[in-house]
Amino acid sequence: MTEIEIFAKFVKDKRTALGKSIADLSEEVFNDRKNRYISDLENGRRKGITIDVMGKILAALNTEISYKEL
Image (cartoon, rainbow, N blue to C red; front, side, top):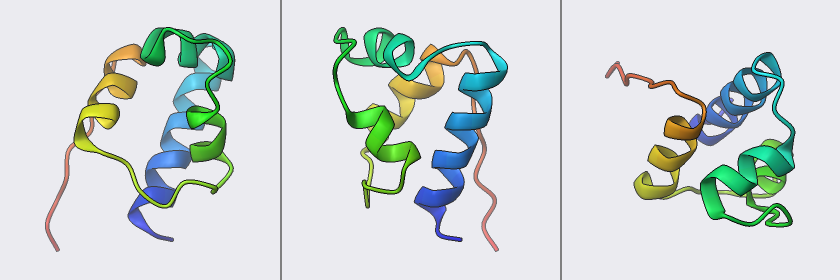
């Protein structure tokens, strides 16, 4: 599993645990309920993500992640 796939699964799991729809999260992150970014991310159609967008998603999910070098 790639890092982006791991992050996408984390986002989906956290979003659903909070009872948020993709549209809800898109509204919070992009101020646009129809933005497809979150859907594309969760469904493997995005191959990358910027630190800025990652930070916005994490803030909207009221969480943070840490990175551990191997």
